[in-house]
Amino acid sequence: MINVNVFSNEKAWSKKLKRKEFFFNKICRAFPKKYKFLGKKISFSLLLSNNRSIKKLNKEFRNKNKSTDILSFPINKKIKMSKQTYIGDIIISYDFIDKPKSQKIEKFKEKLIKIFIHGFLHLLGFNHIKNKDYQKMSNEEKRIYQSVISKLN
Image: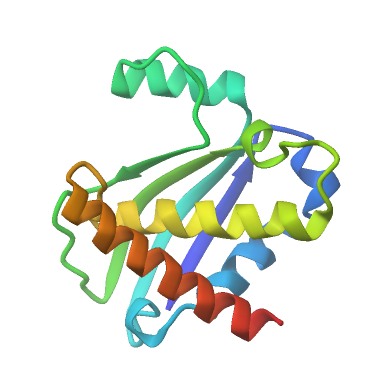
């Protein structure tokens, strides 16, 4: 079982997501069986933030002085899932997800689910540095997204 601890330092998130923790934990419950980690307690933190805050973190931890849509900080490069495992932290920028501002709430949530899955896979050790790794990660993202969408609709 996966548990997401959700925090926010950007008020705008509350306009689009009323029950943030429920929303993200519901997504995790819709993951394919392989990513549900049945019989285990897997947890991570999610910070719903903005461009200004994520830019600071990107500069401090990745030496990139620009904002980005998402940052993932896995606890370890190779994670061994024990009965109780904390796998890391994800930060998502509201400003990136809310473009264009005229988009419907359904599109906003679709983008958010996709980027959340992307960050989750980074916590599990996936990356997209090499083309073969990009393909593997992209395929897993699509697989998880299809599972989530089919169970949420």
